[in-house]
View (cartoon, rainbow, N blue to C red):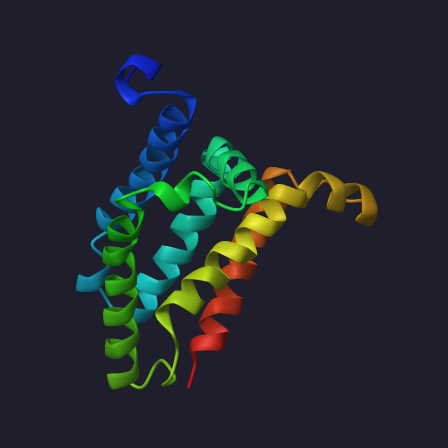
Length: 164
């Protein structure tokens, strides 16, 4: 898609369109995983792995989110579709949590929004701070092995939290 001010009105309109597009891309990719049809533990593990790998493969997504947060979501607050983009994700997580509780593999009382924030946070913080953390801890946290180790760690943290 060609992003022009003629179509979107001004630079803010173009920027908002880019933000909506990047959110739509990740949400549509999540929907294509068909998680609600799968075993709750396997599906949750897949969601965690997908989110982590998406962050690795799409650094532009993290950069735009970081920039928009610096602006206190000024542009995103004007979006008419951002909430509807996230409703399917919350719905899928809710279904997985309910099915997991029923199967006695997940504990009760988990808020699906808080859970997704946890999943995203565990990856976002690492990726957005890997250069400073690498320097502080004397490790190259961007190495493929370090990224794989972090992905496994995130899965275990989330699944450990969900256990009854």
